[in-house]
Amino acid sequence: MMEISTDGLRRNDRLDFWSQTVLKRMAIDRRDEEAHAFHATLRRVAGNAGEFWDHFSTAIHVERSERRCRADSGAEIYVGLVLDGRSEVSFGDRRVRLVPGDVYVTDFSRPVRAHWLKHRELGVMFTRGAGPQDVGRLAPAGAVRLLSSHLRTLADEATDLSQDERSSAVDIAIQFARLALAGGNPRDGQDNPSTLLAAARQLIARHCTDPELSAAFLATFLGCSRASLYRAFESEPESVAAAIWTARLQHARKLLLTDRAATIGSIAFRSGFLDQANFNRMFRREFALSPGEFRHANGMASERSGRL
Image 1 (cartoon, helix red, strand yellow):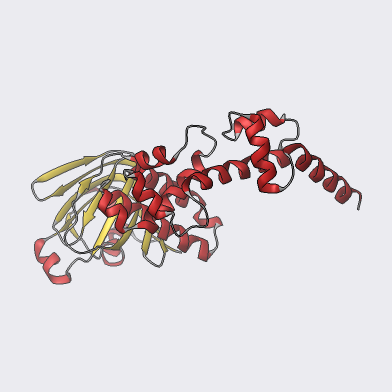
Image 2: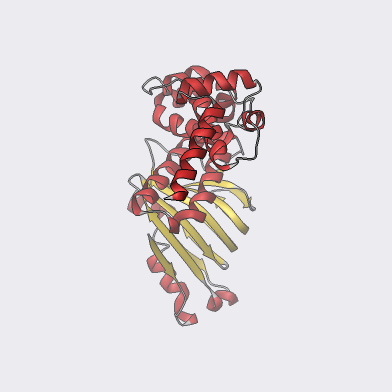
């Protein structure tokens, strides 16, 4: 993890420093009266597939010209989430005004001009696939919401993760970005089963306590067909439905260990089960004990441990 900041620099040097160290793909378009007060910070986290950026800056005007694009080929794509502030980005004749919550795409093989006001962004930078990528704001569909959530979590937790954990989290963010860029095209989902699998597993972990969670729900949220989703799980030890039930059972197991005042029925309901008898059967099949026996056995073990 690398952190870069204009802190400690003379005011007149800050913008030039930022241009030379961070904005290597862009050039300062113009300097206004506020340029001397420019301030910025950047936290970069590397993964195997690209980088995660947590970026803050005061107002700045930047441009990537067509000449610059021809000179360095522009093989990268940036997918960013506006966290705070407002900005305006122009892709040719198309002007896009960005507000907090917007997710947008920049393809560095194409010219772009931006007027960033004071703002903070989270994003990922990675190598583009074959052919140019559509640019601009992405519609807030399922995969885009999933990417936004993951970027926020990564920004919050990055300092507490190990280097390997951070790298894996960045690669997952890039997988989600690629899924979002696919725009819900089922063919693309078929061509990227690992991306679809990672996205589905995160959704299952987040929504397993919802009794309505199903393969149909996941397919709709991710913008893919159910057939594509099933294919993504073909090489896994369990099916989509089994993965959902396993997540619910693990959630119930955790509650049995941590919320000893809750009834078995309450825990079943809070874990996505509408039928306690079915919950009891599935729990016994998974853990070889009924929920009550499991709680009792672990309670006795805790008491013995406390007496030692």
